[in-house]
Image 1: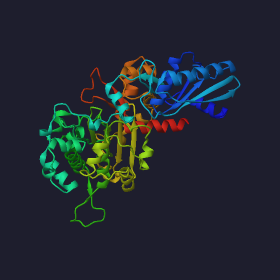
Image 2: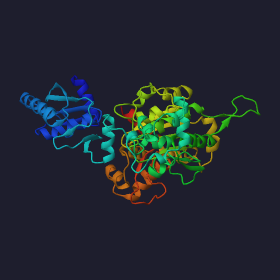
Image 3: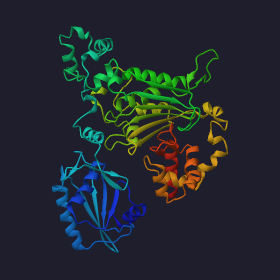
Length: 486
């Protein structure tokens, strides 16, 4: 790294991958920073910066001491050890030590007290949630959610008809003639432990999976407009059952809430769905198979006037990015579930689903949201299909004078500071605004009306637990604003 690159990084400020410190004197504190980076995709620690982001510089003696401290922290105070790389950059103010911490391959990394640290924005935080710890062990291939036994279940909870049809189709013989008891057969197939079903067995062949895992369903809603906080809806359904039943139900829900168009075909011929069916198939299957089953949340399907959103619990695993999956790269979060589901659902595997969907319909946004622990696929509907339906002020804020607040500096400022899910008071504090009425009238309400921000509890706007988060259009506005600044 040269001086120009260093100054460019300093000008951008701290973020999840870049942290500035004046100095380091404590091995335990330094170990926590190293572990947080290793657990969160890697990053760079810059020693020799003031709190305001200006360069303070280090002396040659400082560098010698820090090298010894860093080696001790990395090898003795982090378990398993990490292997940072250092580089010294000479500046007019002194030397800046650049410490590069690679993404860890043996997550989770712990400090000397057995604590797990991860990056959160420019800071770090201590992981205490059991679900988050389970996800980290899953990424390290130490445990998988899809093979965790479901307490209280037994072979009696299997739908015999569905299981026999699968076994016959895949192995060419009825399970009744396999020579094994049903318990032994399920255990051999990785669907149980001989006593209880695991999550794969329950979700693929269970009689009533939601009896044991009520959150593992699909919640589907169709809205007349373009915003989530709309109090009206056209259609709504909670889709339960096995994964195959959820797939069929969700697919049918989307189809009945989209338009069918002739596209040059004869008047009496059935119209084609406005979005190719293969696109919806691929994205739905991916959401059901690759979701994070350590997170007690439902897959959400939302049909808006201009788009379809399929939201899957759990952000992309490890260092996988939306661009990676666009190119066909994949990591199996639920390998046992995937193995069996590939013979039940229209799943082709090998990372081909997303590229296939994009080839059929390029207007798809893939949004990884680590702070919200979710992944969204946004399929934009053809404008010709929805423009006429959104011409009235009631339905479409973009077709009325309400478009004005979308461009105000106040809304852009709110979008810029909204990180994850935040309460009204938290947003107001970050913005430095004391007048609640002014904040609501000039910032919050225009952002909600424009569809850039949504409530986490839309059914209870006045709830004391109400928080706000960016919508897909809000994230797009944020990216546009950041691009302008750069």
